[in-house]
Image (cartoon, rainbow, N blue to C red; front, side, top):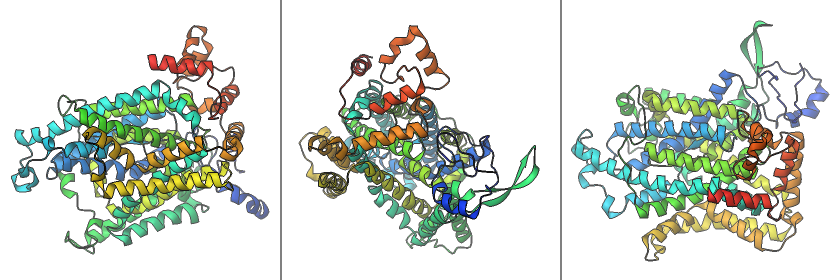
Length: 621
């Protein structure tokens, strides 16, 4: 059977149109030689495709595992500020809650938000202001909570100690998230994108990965042998063995039980790498090859470190809003959270572009970006109400997974969202994943963050990199995004304006590499003289226009689901909705709508009357 290609130019490679695995194409040696280089870089499934249900589950588990390291780390880090170091059962409840909310927010984002295959989870940008708030004198943990022998987790006194701190966090996060909801649904973020080009997106996305080198190194450094093995396995599966098809049993009505050759290494490299390393760690732990002394190197590679949590975790738990009590509001906490929200929005916009690029989708139009940021703000509001102690944001790790697996279907992310909701409900399931050793997570981060950094640099292909102007802008932005946050972290007392709230605001902003690099790239690219061709605007728009012509049309990907957009565009009584900044514009055909979105990419175009009306109405709403 010959490989089937759609009009969008994305090769299914090992898959047929009906979503079932197919046999390998029978090609001559000459055809294989000429087309092999192009085929291996194509997507197995693009954003609009629907893989078989069993493949959605497997790939969904892979995305859950990819996000697991970041999601699980947040409640464990917060437990120190919440005085929960010695209460493993409450920590497991927090883990279940953040999984449940992350799954819920993922479903909202993929269905009604940006509509790209991008997973939502806890954000580290809110972790810094949260810990800063909990370190204030009134929230310092009592000395007796630091002694495991003196902690009675069931006592009312201890419960009030940690729940009062959690309620203060909840209120600050909920109030701060309203700002993100306003910026998104009012259309302000969409208008801001008129001034963003390749030289702004490139350093922002690159620094998402580059700034996380310390997190990857810290996890991997707990046992370099295990982490290196994980990295090598993922590289081996995703790069060297991706052309090799594995014969697996399959059943169809036509062929009955037969053998089909499937590119299993291309679509499941991360899951296979993590699973094999996890299994090896389990075997080494069972035979006591890994040290049992916490002071010895390699102890953190054991899989039995969280065994007590698995035993104490209930089979079923049902997180609900206000489960820790009525939230309270702190002004200092709200200001600090606002700084984290701003950084999160900038990071998310970069993630949207990277995700669109890696999933075979056209660049996101303004109305989709507006909805995406608005839904993320709504997700932070839900996270605050449920009491995760954190918010939600788009996960860069999963954007990197798209580039490795070559599977960009948003149906897979829907499956991930459903799985995370179930993990939040079934306490034992979430507790099992706590046994993944940190070196395995670190090895995965080594690959993922590298792919994210490269995806950002890839945007420079549109700009003229023979221009000294562009070289200066990109180099200075990236270097500043690494130097300034590093210095601030080493000199935390350097920022002393006399106003605690301003100090917290500057502290969070200047320690966020994506914000620093993106800010310099944005300012310099829009102020240093340069032609549109030199800045990459012409090639940027031309490439996106070409993508829309040969791949997917913008309306197909970003319009509202369930025929809502079609109803609004065809109904004369709802013509006023075109002025709402988060609604798709009315269009006579999908192609015309795509062209309109392309024009919106030009940072220097004039602000039209309709766009101005959208902003005015959005702000008024």
